[in-house]
Image 1 (cartoon, helix red, strand yellow):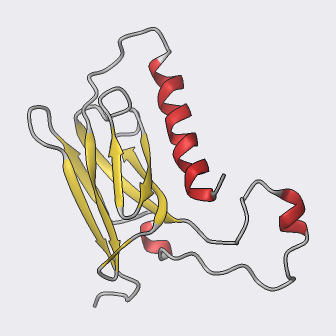
Image 2 (cartoon, rainbow, N blue to C red; image 1 turned 180 degrees about the vertical axis):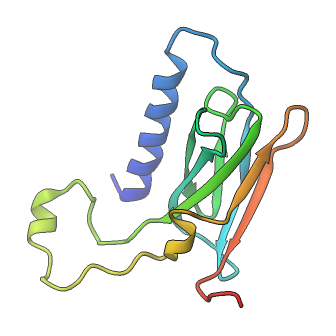
Length: 146
């Protein structure tokens, strides 16, 4: 199983775990969109929606070929969110393969494809609204804007 498949599998497992909680919980809305880096679709990664309020429901989705989707049951309640994006670093083996990691050439790991400013304390925001299509596009750049 390649890293993209593992990331997608983890997202599906998380969605199923959340849907099995038994309580109806808050209204959840589907969210989808695209993530590009310097004009090209982000090959693989993860997008995280963090509630702007100190409490609330977070949402995660795998980014595959620049696209992400949170379905109704794994979607987000209406509200304001800070958005974090992480790119997947390609190592040539699965991240959980300890033997391959230990036997890799002893050179530095490749740098993250997505700049730090989009990974934590990011300026990216989204507002999820009931009754509207919640489609968000995030054009990221590796160059600092002035």
